[in-house]
Length: 281
Image 1 (tube, rainbow, N blue to C red):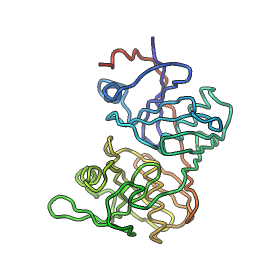
Image 2 (image 1 turned 60 degrees about the vertical axis):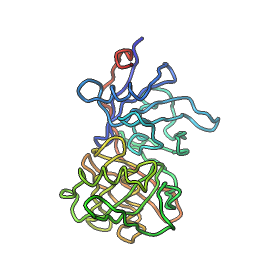
Image 3 (image 1 turned 30 degrees about the vertical axis):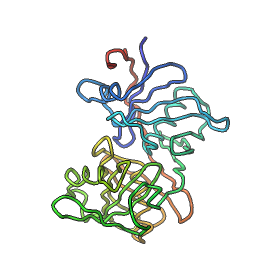
Image 4 (image 1 turned 120 degrees about the vertical axis):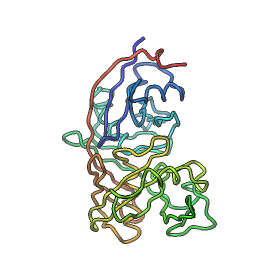
């Protein structure tokens, strides 16, 4: 039996999207890694799976798997692609959705030209909510890196954990060296996404993200939300800000005590079919 799938991306953060409402398949970690391989498989940052919801007041259930086969709670670029996918594949006629994820309910709204606005929920900052090991909550934390270096970070959970650090220039930031150290740091028991943000002005910032289980990606929606919220909390950014990533720009809005709103584009690359047996053990 051939499995139908769609290749999509949000600002270059790319996905294999599979409808498991009208068809059936099982993905173990090894199969996902083989599918994610950019030379021998489809190639993607994350696999997105559409499933029936577990609750009556929700439209869909949405599962996300990194390229290394690990399941994660949330993906900002992914949820925008998810919303466009279910609408264009006629799984729904709604343009405003309630979607069940491992980290709670998200609410995407489809707009014109493939753009989607998403209620990303409330940011979390307490160490146990990240999770992050700390004696007590602080506004910023210093963590130890290799060669006796230290890095100052803010920690934010936007459905998945993020560590945000301010850099003078994202182009010269040593993301390849520091990113893996932060991702697997002992103080993050479930690993973490590492964000490197340059403040351009109070309404504009640049960002690079080293994602756990993936590496550096062209864009990260939850990372943009976390970075924006971090900058706003520090008084460095306005309540509505443009976050510029390698793959393009996202608009993030947040006020203290409220939910975070993310707006950005989506794109469909191609539709395909494959025999899943060739990728299974």
